[in-house]
Amino acid sequence: MSSSRIAILDVDGTLVDSNYQHAMAWYRALRSLGETYPIWRIHRLIGMGGDQLLPTLAGDEVEARIGDEARERQGKEVDALLEEIAPLPGARDLLLAIKERGHRLVLASSGQQRHVDFALDLLDARDIADEWTSSADAEKTKPAPDLLQVALKKLGAPADAPSVMIGDSPFDVQAAKNAGMPAIVVRSGGFGDDELREAGAIALYDTPGDLCAALDETDLA
Image 1 (cartoon, rainbow, N blue to C red):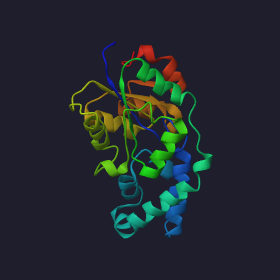
Image 2: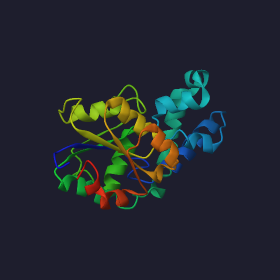
Image 3: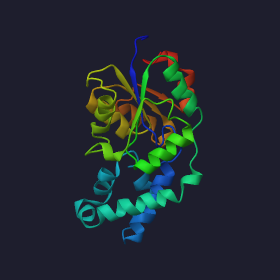
């Protein structure tokens, strides 16, 4: 338990409270292109990257017809909501606690680079995290394991390096499982305990702060 590990943390919904803004941004972007879907359905897919969310939500025909334009508009809609996004309770404390215990830390986001930059600045995390990712770093985003594998490569670590994923959605858990690592989950993504556990989460906490307080009970002790 005391050996050095790599902590790979999701950003949106895990460290910053942005899932509902992203859901609204997708709703507005798609509606502007003549495609309207219930926001609850969109929210249920937040945690996937944009390359996978749209075909899952609307099908391959819609993806082929408006996918690139929808992602561009969604990004602009998120831009307009950035001032409404705040860190989740204890988010920066969690990052500091992980580093203080001697672990390496990667923020593995599937968001667009400018939104990753926003989150890094919001959390004042540039001097804490060893590396970070964006959607540009992998061909497929979560639940594919690509971003987690890229996170390890950025540290120069092998694929089987002792690692722990911290996320907020079943897609984070599935990506971790596909990458061969355990996943700890915070409930701030808005998903139910049953589906998070069914996906394979090994532990659940309400907020990053709650996880920070219990860190010595985890593999990141």
